[in-house]
Length: 392
Image 1 (cartoon, one colour):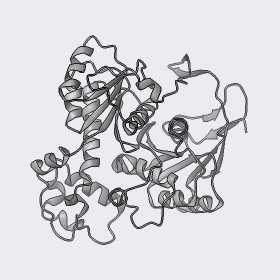
Image 2 (cartoon, rainbow, N blue to C red):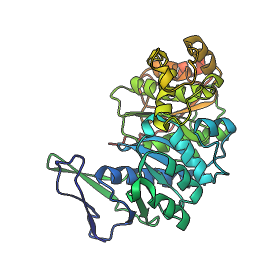
Image 3 (tube, rainbow, N blue to C red):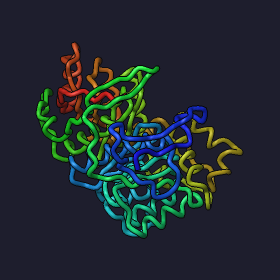
Image 4 (spheres, one colour):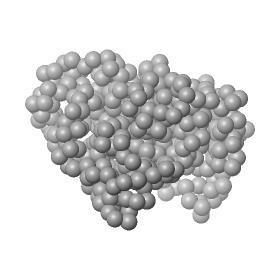
């Protein structure tokens, strides 16, 4: 197949629309079910590159959850603790495969943002992974292959209209890539930079100790950033992204946005949140929204009379700011990657509030000394990678 006609482009008025390989070769994808659209393919192909890179860097199965051409979550297939199974709502499922664990982590990092996601998987989609996908609101999935049982499960989703794409894992794109803006063609070399532990060798802080687990998490954060709309930062822990800030004009706003998401991920593991008394048969989206509101500043929106009865069997106590701060203060050893240098130390101050201990950023700011000094104040270890990871 040389090209594939699409219903429309980014918006219904943008017609005609199609995808094709510019040198006239066959497309490396096959649509096994559904009718993916323009944005679906943008998410799928960016997500596929991300999980391919994660698998190459870690040797573990990888998954990502994309929305609007940026990842809401990304992870590798490490086992889940009982607490993680509960906050990812897979504690009722049978034993999960490594790939299923990867997707549960990627989906669970920021469930609000992942609502209606497009999924990318590094390995053959198995039944265990398909069963998680089946129960979530999602637009589609791309993977190098599918088991017969997994494909049967996925084809039944969305009344038979769920988008399932198979990609050739051996496909190598051209080294020059192009895009058009206002009728003008831009050309650049593809960003084929390999991200691995080697780029973390230049540790510039007094604390030089970055354990292997932290290196893994820093690599995960940097690979995630490679495919996130800039400016972007990524908090990572235990083999997964826990907070991704994308497309912010100010770096500190990006750090705050991603930090708030990381805080939400941490707060969801607090017993006070785990034990929320939800009404029976509450919809997954309503439950996720209630949790997000409950742990946020607008908690009365879900605790007010007439509101709480819709989601809770009994009215929960307020999760006070002091209780939240006490829980977050227990966080430690979190990794933070940045796609460009930190221009001010306020970024480090905000990262500290979310338990960050390890940082990877390009370096090169005129204020590097101030940023390093702030890291030293908190005993953080920071590596200058010397690489920028802008993605537009």
